[in-house]
Image (cartoon, rainbow, N blue to C red):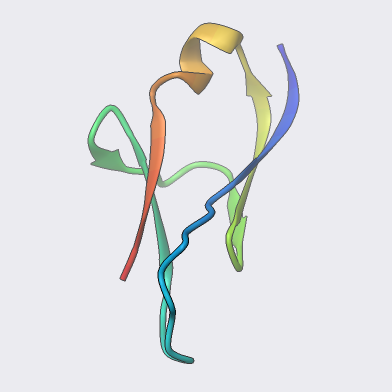
Length: 57
């Protein structure tokens, strides 16, 4: 396990008031540190990485 930074990317045109929402297994993420479109996680295995997704709201 090692520190990981996930990025949420979109091809949509976004307005100035958008937010990025992170999910793990369909539940909103409460651990880690989110800033703009990135989620910083202290320690995540490769298997766990497959469980993360993001949405733009």
